[in-house]
Image (cartoon, rainbow, N blue to C red; front, side):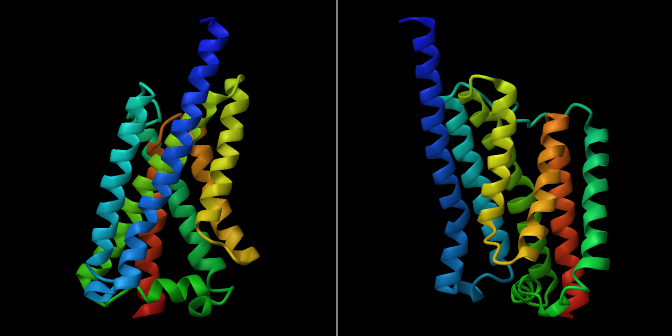
Length: 239
């Protein structure tokens, strides 16, 4: 078998494993949402159930990524789960997370409908008024969003997909753009405001990942914004 044939076989295997992993990953993300949304067990998507959703997403998706990476003879370090320059990454991630929170809750949300915005209305329906319920919602935002989504949509998606391209640099940026588009579509935007609200932070999370080559900054930025948004929505629009 020639070197080119071996490389083509490897790229085909990588692409096949990637596609299967992405499809299964999206299914795992939506299973708890559909389960609690349809069955309404223990009140549905509210209270402690949000914590269960977060833990299911984290455990199932990371298990899927582990198996997928093992098949490809890679590990979590390969997709950016490394902790060099931890302080610097945390600082840069926190900086963007705080900045986007301020822009949204001081300027954008109050001037684009506030409580009457569909996203704020939908979030308000997920509070049960209890401390445990609010902390569970925060857990969903940080664990299900900040950690699991970054591992899957940023780390795995970009770093594995780029390997199927001949030119690694071209592959990196094409993979990054595709990850941004699919991540945004996964949040089901229906208006220009929805697209703006999801695209701006998604692009920034992706740039943090690309320039640091690690997931720490994007996880911190994503987690801080989600946590802040859940807490501020509770005090500004629910109570």
